[in-house]
Length: 197
Image 1 (tube, rainbow, N blue to C red):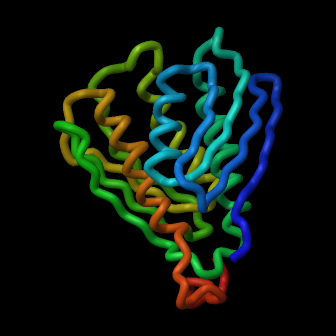
Image 2 (cartoon, one colour; image 1 turned 90 degrees about the horizontal axis):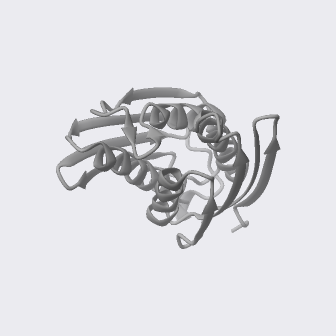
């Protein structure tokens, strides 16, 4: 099995990001985004997806966290796409329904090559700490668009904003883990009748 490890970097006038992603890791992380809540969410994403993730971002956080959140998701999505190569042998689909205290979150992913997002995560407050909760949607949209994946995230129930967003990151990580996992019986097969993903 080839190593599915990618190093990636992106620099703009708004952010400077370096990232290493190992799809077949054990959930080891070293994350520094300049935003405590986003660090927490990406650490959970790494651990629950069993992705090894090293990520450093210097962004224009004196403005807000928008560019930081979106640009990290762009780089992370591209890293997933690059690490997956031609997609041969992957399960392709993954789902997770995850309870996080009173919140219940559904995530479903298709590594389809066709970016699409179904985002229905109603978050009751505008902020968690100093993090704008609307940026959660921006993260997953950029991740899916740049990762070439169809991603659905839906709140089934939930009242606490922190729990809802945390549930979304955990559920999406576990769904992605399932989708990118290799099916040992079909390692040379593209999981599509088109023969291409």
